[in-house]
Image 1 (cartoon, rainbow, N blue to C red):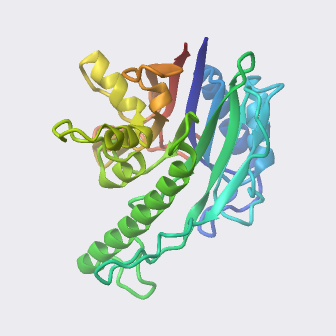
Image 2: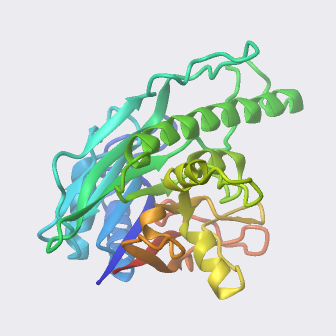
Length: 331
């Protein structure tokens, strides 16, 4: 049995005629029709059983595009809090059964505000509340997986309101502020993951736009570090480390193919993997007790344009991110 899980940043999905950002014009009816048709077409190409969405402003718009795709007719489509007044939210579409309620997490878990050497994380909430759900992977066995959908703070500067727009010192500070928020959100997401995986055999996945590469520090915070192979003895300690790791589907599949030509975003000629599918050890191919393994990670990025090489200008109909689908074969 193969289960396909994906992530899709839809780039500001909102109802026509309704503002979503103060400095952006609402979509016209014609624009919305084009955008809805494009998203539905991508969902058809992805053919995923489960998709996490980022940048959803209206839940009924997400329901509309999913209905047009005909991929989730009898499934679950939700975007909690996406009412147009709460900024961009996260969504989930699943043709796998959902066990219980789909919930969101806004406040950081306890323990993230502890200061060490006078340094603490000066952030207490997610800028985009994390979505958490439990889905049934295999109805026959009753096997479930905990799924987190996330969208961490981007690399876009956080500017002081009165700072000059092109001040290089303020640009440096703005990048540092954005990194601090993204790092704090990564640590908070890690705490949520640890609640699911430590001391359990609960399969867990993180789907989303993490706004950094697979080996970036912020992504490493979420996945955790593997134990050193040179540690003497202490098998219980090593087992504890393996129990709490997440694995990047990108790295698992790149290692197997022997090459990496993947990217999910292009900015100023830089090709990056910002979107990720992370899985717990229950889907890791080297784990003897695994319930499945990631076989392939598919990238849907033909719509992305390198503005340094092409005169084409990206519009707001298509996404500025690729879509990912990881195929997991259950044992």
